Amino acid sequence: MRKHMTAAVAAALVVAACNQDPTGVSGANELILAQNAQLIAQDVAASTGATCEGWWARLRDTLRTTDDPEARAFLDQAAAYRDSAHTAWDAGDTTAARGYRRLAFRSVLAAVIELFPNAPERTGLAVDQALVRIERFLGGRDAPRIRLILAHVKDLRAEADRALAAGDKVTALALNLRGMQILHRLVEHIREAHRDHDAVADGEMQAVGY
Image (cartoon, rainbow, N blue to C red; front, side):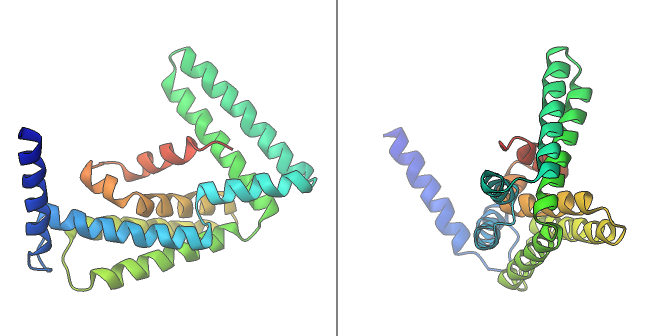
């Protein structure tokens, strides 16, 4: 009986949120908007493959049929950094472990760029596309928490473009992937009230197997 009542209350809350003024900024209503915005970002990611998982898959598939010594050297370097991260973690040095994980991640990005030199630009364009579509969907709604995150992703895009202009493709790709990852998990970032969106996104990407 209690379970049925809880489900009924939850359903009533969802209905109430949906029936609110679309320009409202209640927490429930904004989470519904965030869910739709996240679906938009995921659709862009699925159509472009501009996520860390997408680039890792291209990297693995290409190296099955292509012998690229430089790309393989970057991956060997990444494996060495991962081993160092495990050693540091076992020794209780979490700061060093995080540093080695970051270096491993950047080494894999270098391997991606070796095989796909335009990966930073392609990922940046995908993030821009997602931002435009999400903002078009939001229209005139306030959605303050969503818009703060969108503004942060725009800052990441600007920083990525500056890195690209300076010739640092690895940093540019890392920043663009971070922006896409944040949009890809928009609901979680809002619901869990993450204070450091970048650290959460980087941790999620660095945990992806490659």
